[in-house]
Length: 157
Image (tube, rainbow, N blue to C red; front, side, top):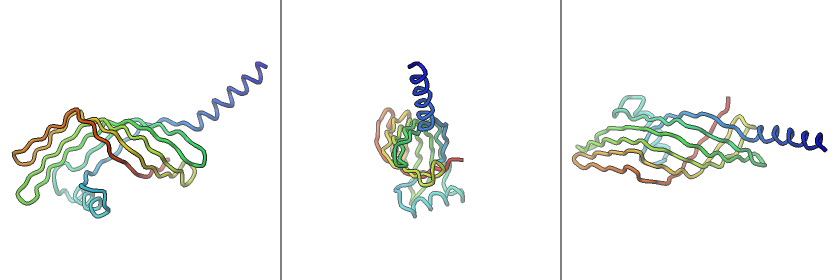
């Protein structure tokens, strides 16, 4: 009986370790007004060409990937996110800064085994500090909680 229980526990632990992975992650952020292809392309081009100031942010954190049946997976994450952007349009200067904790819970699908996958899901954000200045108007959104969405693709090397 002890042998059967030991074999069962070892087998379960091997199966469980193959289905769950923990990873450190880091991403670059290109802030954009809306998620249209032209806005995303324009924001990336502005960052490359140097239009605006400090218009690229970053986030770092942890990601847990839990495999589900039929190539699906759930991926809860936690990040520290920072970005700063300053730009001028028609005599109005915008200075946007943000430090926050993001907690996305993503549902994904593996396209090529574990090598390539796509994901989508909600993300809750808690602002640690956020000071936006629009000419003489200043917004302080510290301690605000917001909900948004996230989508993307991943490539595991």
